Structure formats: structure tokens, C-alpha cells
Length: 475
Image 1 (cartoon, rainbow, N blue to C red):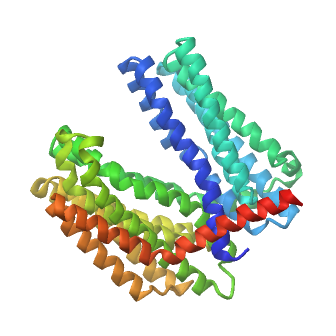
Image 2 (cartoon, helix red, strand yellow):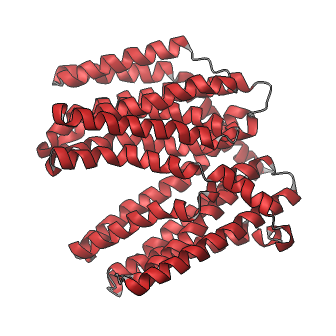
Image 3 (tube, rainbow, N blue to C red):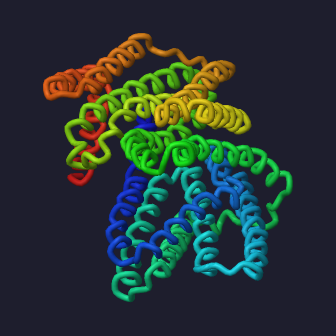
């Protein structure tokens, strides 16, 4: 399988699992809003938010290190035993320390859902690591399958516990905890992890090596959290909560790009790590990054074309001001995509300190610009600070990564991308029936012409898979 085909296949497989997870979350929303009282749902949502924030800290981002180290050792059984054993031993020690601290805090501070919170944290933390073990071993199908199993089991348990037994928020947390426990069991036996746990392989040196890679990923994650959340915080403090609602709606549309890229980035990090030492790495990396730029600029302008046509239907006129900030936030996501692609080079070289350094700088830039501009230009300050922060990450990584890989941007792709973005943005802000139709036609032509090679490649791959499957069944 060539590099481009491998990247595409992995992206499709991972997309199925991630889409299943997102779709399940969407299906659960009507259950929560119909069968939980507002205050209970608010508490549960807050608990889940904090759980998702604390899991990477409790795990010390071992999920990222076990994934990266296993990629290099897929054909070496002894080294796989060494990595998996030491990762799990370290994880157990970390969760034991957390559990003791949690129990001590519980003696002095009483709060709702005490035992269910730690039940969820423990199995969601273990699940996050085992999912990356699966990916590191090359079992992306197992990763995707487990995401689907966990998602569908969550729905079934919510129906039983929340709708039928009427357990409210308690039922939500029980469902989540059990679903993640089943996911852990699925991964453990599917990948036969019992074969890779040998306590005689426990090594302080290996644990330190894994943590040396993973620890810088904690400030990296917190920096992205600051970039994404600080905007809303500053808006709430210096403008008002109504403005925060407007900005949140704008972000929902621009974050469509982030959702797509999160899937591609997972498979990209794997491909980059597998092929970082290939002779043709410069051409492979350059071609991939140029293709991704072309695809995401296309998605960006397609979103801009569709929003004016569907905004009233999807959102409503009370949030009409949100339209103003969407192109700016879409541009920030383009820079985010480019920065993420170059981040894959650091991951492939195990340079997580460089990853953290760039995002910390971007977070500081975002905070400073917000503080300076928010009183003067309101919501524009939040949008512009986000653009600049992501642009800083992209430029820094682009220049710095030249030490490892020589990336060449296709001038033709860059020129067309800038041209179509500027053109669509101008027509977007004019926003009348005539300009929207022109924008739609031009973007449709651009999407086909610029991405015809990618489209042809994807359809060819699907066609070959279908026909090869038929021939195999015939034989």
C-alpha cells in the first residue's frame, strides 16, 4: 500500500469510529433534555466537562506516548511487551495516587455523584490509553469498532436507566462508566493484551522515557484549551453573556473544520511517524500537506456558501450577528489545520517539547491580544486573536520543521486558495440572493476543478475495493 493510499484508508477507518461517537452524542441530547430536569442536566454536563479536562492530566498523556512508541516497534514483540507493560504499570500507579487523593478530599468535601465520578474517571482514563495501544499496534479497525461498541452501549444503557428506570443524572454516569468498562474489555481481548503484560519487564528507565515524551503534551493540551476557552471568558467578562452566545454560534460553524481535521490528524500522525525516515519523505509530506490545504480551503468556502442559505432555518434571526464572525473563524481553522499538519512532523520525531512550546506561545498571544483589544472592538477581538494565535503556530512550525523535513508549498495551490477565499468572503459579506448564487456556482466549479485528482483517487479506491470484494466472493 503506497503512502497516500495508506493515509486515506486509515482516515476512513478512524472517521467511522469518531463519527459514531459524535453521532451518539447527538442522539443522546434529546434523552437528556427530555428526561433530566434542567439543574440535573447542568450538573452532569459540568461533571463530564471536568472529567474530560482531568483525564489527560491523571494519565499524564501516556496515551500519546504509547501510541507513538508502539508505531516504531510493530514488528518487535519483545519491545511491544516492554512498552505496553510499562505504560500500564505507570498508569496504574498514577490512578492509585489520584484515587487516594480523591478519597482524602471526599472526607472533607461532600459532593453529588461522588462514587460515580471516580468510576467514570478510572475507566475513561484506561479506555483512552487502550484505544491508543490499539492504534499503535496498527489495529485501527479495533479502535473504530470499540468506539462504536461504546457509543451504542451508552445509548442502550441510557434508554434503560434514564428513560425506563428514571435514574436521572445517576443513570447517565452509570451508563457512561459501564460503556467505557466494556470498551476496555473489548480492546484487552481483541488485541490479546494479556500476552503483552510481563511484570518482569517493568523498567524505571522505560517509564521515564515514556513520560519524557508524554509530559510536554499536558501543557500543550492546556494551551489549546486556553486558546479555545479564553475567548468566551473574556467576552463574558468584558462584553456580556448574550455576546458570548453569538460568538458560540459562530464557533459552531467554524469548528466543523476542526472536527474533520481531528480525524485526519490522527491518521496523519501515524503515517508521518511510519514514513519520517523514508527517502521520499519530503515529497510525501509536501504532497500530503498541499492536498490537505486544498481540501480544507474547499470545505471552508463551501461552508461560507451554505451558511447564508441555511442560517435562518438552522439557527434563527435572533443570532443573525453571528454571521459576521464566521469567515474570520474559518480562516483561523485553516491555520489550525496547517499548524496541525506540521505538528505531525514533531510527533514523528518525538519532539513533544517543541509541540508544547509553540502552543504555549500561541496561548500567550491569544490572551494578550484579547486583553488589549476586547474593550475596543468587542467580539472581533476574540475572532482576530484566535486567527493570530493559530497563524503563529503555523509559521513557527513551518520555519522550525525545515530542520527535519523540507516542505514545499505548491504556489498554484496557495494562489488559488487565497483567491477563492477572498472572493467567497467578499460575496459572503455582500449577502444577497444574486451574490449567493454566484458564490455557489463559482465554489462548486472550484471544488471540482482543484480537487478533481483527489476525487478521482478516492472513487478509484472505493471502486477497486467494491469490485475486488465481489471477485473474492465469486471465487
